[in-house]
Every structure is written in C-alpha cells, then in structure tokens.
Image (cartoon, rainbow, N blue to C red):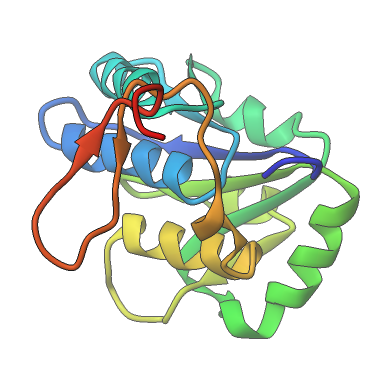
Length: 181
C-alpha cells in the first residue's frame, strides 16, 4: 500500500499442470489485496503472464517476478518474513506484532504450494496459521492481507487501468476509466 514499506508475496513451490490455477490466484490475490509484488518459482511463467495481463488491464502498480532461488529469497530478505501455514501461531494472536514490524520494514509473505521444507519454518520470523484447519493457501493469503492492512486495501485506487469494474447490486459493468466521468 502507498507510503508503507513493501509487501511481497513469495509462492514457494509450483507444480506445472497441477498448480497453474492456484499459483495464478496467489498472484491475483496478492495484487488485489494490497501487496506490491509477487515472486513465483521460475517454472511458473504462465502464471506470471496472466497476472501481468490482469495488471495491465485493471491497473497497478504491481510487479511479478520469477526466481530459481526461493530459499535465498527468504534467507536474504531485508525485513520481516511471515510464512503462512496451518501449523503456525493464530493470526489473531500475532497480527498486531506483524503490523507493527511492517511499519518499520518490508514484509515477505511466504505461501507454500507443495510440501514446504523445515528451513522455511526456521527462516520465518513468524509462522502464521489462518485457522489451523486444511484450507486454500489463497484463502489464507486473503485473510492475512486483510488483517495486515485493516481493510484499507478494499478502498485502494488503481493507476493506469484500461478497465474498471463499477460496483452494482446486480449485473456487471466494466468501463474504460478515461471515458467514465
């Protein structure tokens, strides 16, 4: 979010063919709910293209990167690292501390795909559970970002959008924001 340290989301692991949709949705959720960028594994190029396309059409700023160094990204992060896992501390118990840390330094949110190695748990400043029940990593990311930003991300304005969705009780309306006055 503007005027705050960066929030980046790292998708840890990607199985082509199996995880394409989920990895893409991690990126779209990160973008829509206030993160500044997402980092995908280097074999998730299709997800990168999709998220960049959505950003181009619906506005930014938002960056998408690929890396072959997932562990190094965590290890070398200069800021706070939060790993979302159903085995972590309850989000409602640690969200205030994380929000306070984020006021001072960048935040990396690690979202697992396949089985996450123990070194990710050890490398995180916080291992955080959004419920301690099995659920989608996309749902966990959405709840976490909403808690981090206290709902402010829902009021975000998008720059350089080719399309803008107009909220309606029923129906669908998408306009060119340059033509809407």
